[in-house]
Length: 620
Image (spheres, rainbow, N blue to C red):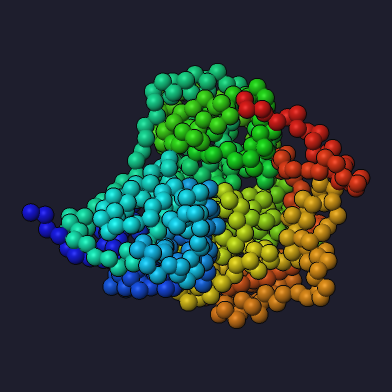
């Protein structure tokens, strides 16, 4: 007879999570690193009760905002290359709704995150309850249903026995290299506390692994044939290279066959900056050298990338007759734009294609040409980050930090103008040390995501720092995890670069022929009282060490002090909103422009934008 143990649903969920392990670098490690939680009436009575006894093995980090908790969970999963995750728990109603943006970020970036959120009562006896959204014709519909669009796995537990199927299915999704993404489990407030006789074997320790899908031999053979015939091949290396643990294989493949490598934003730290085959970042926020290579390549071999529009220049970055070939574990990503596909793990795929190529090497003249272009770009970046070459800029701040940081320090940025500036100007010192969140391009990720990454970094006992590049707009949107980092002693170094508003969108506004309006604080008609934010005082009020500097030289000195400190440091510097931008390295990007306008500048902006559309690949 099967032995059972009587537990509440909430207790069973936590006990099951405690028993799930994975092997990382030869060491068995619990897959779930703990959780982020804000309690409310929808989760504290039962889920809170279940978490408390396990607080030492599944630590619960108290967030300040549910959206920030989700960002932190994403940053944690990125650091661990999707091999570990955190859960997020929120109450029913607005607490759970606050997680929607973070779930969308995790979905777009293919990151594991488990959401355990309160829901309305299954019995409906107390309806309508506090914070319930009533849909008059469908009483089963609630705010939690909104997560169906931003989750890879979604369930609502209506009976205690359902978790016997739901939890393993959620974990299988989060660990699947092709389907990886957030899992949402709605927990009605009454069901959380209902008891059930669960089989004891359900809670036995289980060690999981992440599947490595071997590529099809026919697809490999076709890829080998294409690369052998290529005169001007180039590799686009994406974030999937790192998730596969294939950085060494990518490097060896490129070296063995002398093929230039260009990087996506997510793949920005696949190769060292100094590697002779690293031709630079590609696309809208790329480099002149990588875009030169992409435009002239006859075979574009995309490895571990979903080919987002910033990578492809809205599909203008490649020649119309270039042959697109992809290696991706996800069929959906591999098959884009009628590419020749190799569906499989990046590590195994590169090994198989490399074996088929044997000693074949790309034409020497082609590789040397791309390297000559990269040398020009290296010179450009060196001049671009130089202090005093123009008013204070993002690039100068990036250069100052890059020169002083440790090789293994982790850099975090997101949304606004900083992703482009970090991608273009940061010189990678160690593979896998750059996290530029541009999958969902989500303002507010910077500090919260870095907090999650720092938790993971300290778990790994890494002798390095987590460095955040944050604009004033993102800071004002979400800054409360400065306090979280202080409370939990998870030191961050945060650079707040103040350009007086949403300056990168102001730049886009101007580039499309419009006048500055509602982006910079100075150009906001309803901002009738022009007053600056004292970011230093604000950060200090949350317990951080904070100081304001006036130039990149002072920033470097402050950064050195922050490195020596044991507490979160915030360094504030004003940068120019108009003259501080990196002007090189941009590909075309499709945005909607006004075809008809009374403003001559807007009409001209539309004409200029459309004038290069002829370069856009139409599905082929």
